[in-house]
Figure 1: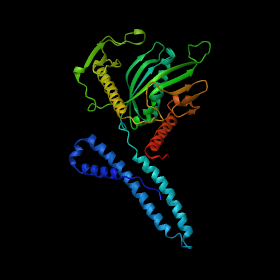
Figure 2 (figure 1 turned 45 degrees about the horizontal axis):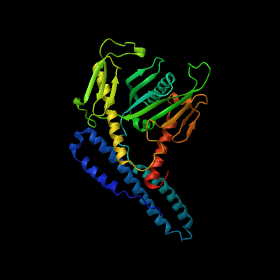
Figure 3 (figure 1 turned 120 degrees about the vertical axis):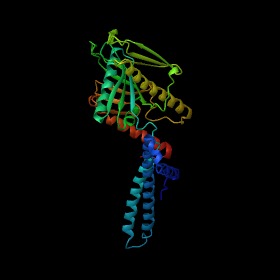
Figure 4 (figure 1 turned 120 degrees about the horizontal axis):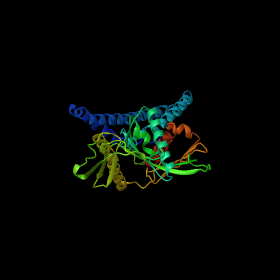
Length: 358
């Protein structure tokens, strides 16, 4: 009979949270109460699955006693086979439930898209990616808000930064970080030659003010008039804001709004998320395990995906996945990519933690 994973630490944590939730004072902090309730539900699922497996194993022992009885042997064997199949399925669910929760799960997400190699074509591709993510967000019922943009003369984006808000945003988008490559004939190419261009995508969890405190004395704030493509003025007031965080050297520029205050608040949102990402990166580097994550690290230097227009093919190089659905993907139908990346990540973590692959 298969051994059931030890869940005693989960049971102890469950009891600890149950005691906390019995204290009315906890609910004065709605954020804390919500987090504890979610963890309580997750741990309850683990305990319930463990209990169910134990019950099925007891039923197998009872049925085994009838194996030597000619009258009930066939029925007992059939019942044991059925119970073993149910235990196998339940054990998969239990192991998945025991996987560590991503600490950024449930957060809103900031995406930063920048044109890479390829000049104007790279900026046009950056615009294609921006519209792809916006359409995907719309399909999912999420909201998007532009935090900053720098348009090119060709109508694309040298840089565009936006926030996506909604349920499971981080879970769905966190694997998009990296270098995206496009292969196609640019609209400016008269000879019909295929060019290769790139754009980088950075995905950051939105930081809460309580997580990242910014001392005003650490900020150098500059204001100026915003300008459009080719230096064209877009308003006549000093509304654009640039923040320099002196300790980290991080620069954020925002000129999306006509209000200087709104631009400053948007710039602070981006700055907090970049500082949180930097902090998390330092922690991961300090405590990194000796393994390579199959779906990638999210490093911007990593080429993760190619969009091949002549063959209408999209390829994710991290998992060797290709599909001839480029048009549909760019129109926001990204679930085929998102789901397979999530499954690969889950399987890799299962193999690492337990030697078991679903």
